[in-house]
Image 1 (cartoon, rainbow, N blue to C red):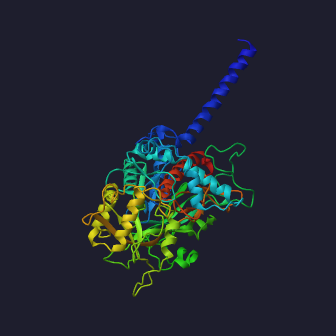
Image 2 (cartoon, rainbow, N blue to C red):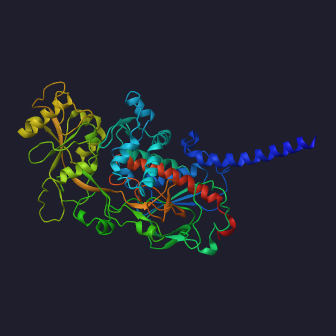
Length: 564
């Protein structure tokens, strides 16, 4: 063999080795999009998975946490612990009733005649009310781009797990029908959460759920135990994480959590990369809500009273943003059996999306386009005089939600539950006031196209009353008293597109806390002034998947010699 040929063979061998390493790292990072990732069981068996130094610790068991845990296992993690302070998993995600957004999905195309949806990003930008701030804008838009760009993959991921998402409707603030739910009786939040829980519980040797365990603080590495001190940062890290900052400005490195077992009060620790998914602070009435939005005092809520967990993140330097931005949902049911209750059931937005209308309780007239954003509809209601509620500080409004048989059939599972709870009452048209009868006739004429809606509504779902035949006295409608409620908090810990928690503010060079990720309502910077309906479940899936993948890749790349 000639010298030249020998050098050629050696060069080729080296190139093949380099290509193999690059391929392995690339496939780990692109598993977010690969079909094998969305299989119904984790594709990596314990016998062949990459050695893992520490377990991954997920804090919170809502959809973001469940998605992160599943993704970490699907990517090859050998062990995932999930800590939940409640007695049962699921968080607020399990109660979600309107659906999950996705643009250009196969279900959207099938349900709406090949619809091409190219406005999801723009709708989200508009809803967030970005004001063109040149410093903050790029970071916010990058998060919104990540959310909307991966929305179809999120729907595919859940569908491949066995979740039915075949029904696609248009909610308020959306220019296209893109909110997915199932055709059966199970609400979308419960369907998604229970499916993921079942899949995780099948991995009993690799997944452990610890309920009634409350995280009390994040553990950080001291300088002499910094596992990143000897890393080579001359090339991009395969997980996509950023290098530490200049000397003296480094954020802490998170290495685990301390938690309290609520059954006996004992403290314990878990070491490993941490994914924080503990939800928002709408239920922290006397804490963060009172601190950032004292004007919302007395508002009922869909969130159970509970302390927030944001302090745990800010204690290690996490930057909290948009904390004053609290979403008021326009329609929470006022229970006739307990009208002054602080905790209320949500009247799902899809009830209006399917054709339902909102009228003043005093005169039965419509006063707002029901498919405007939640912020807009809530403001229109709160501009009306509030109801007088005796012997309580609670603030409520007298507004009625009206459904007909067509809406009832399209939302059968929801309506059946609300009627069982006594939140919706069935009435004959003959029992209604003259003003409300006039409103129903006018709305039917709008739906038929006989006149335009002065309020600007152009989509009417499945409303049927008065459309094919004149309204008769024995026709039936479904009526519920609703009022605005605190529902969702847009503020939280600032993250980047890799779901890393940042110590830097919007508009500054991003400085991530190594070893710490977050997803879901605990985060801030994404939704701006107003979150679109259907995007809460979506952000849990999109950023939960990103966090789970990156936490696993981070873990296997740590230098073992400096962990202990």
